[in-house]
Length: 116
Image (tube, rainbow, N blue to C red; front, side):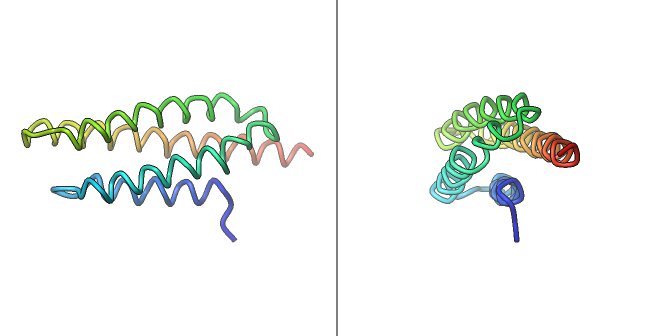
């Protein structure tokens, strides 16, 4: 059974696959981003209450997701191919950061569980 963090990783990876496409579908990109954001807000963010060591990672993830929302909007508004390419690269970098934060959070949770 997948836990909330594994599901978030799956959402992020799906979003990354969309971003890597030559011409990502704006509606699909927006829908996948919203699903990712909602899962984070409702399932992952509350983990900070149970695992305080993970709070810094959650704070950074929340901040990066807000920045990602702006990048998604900017990509959708891009009219020039070079601008769209740049936006896609920025999205990819933020998604890589978020996946790294998932690893940090996973380590903090496992550490807290092993101390119990």
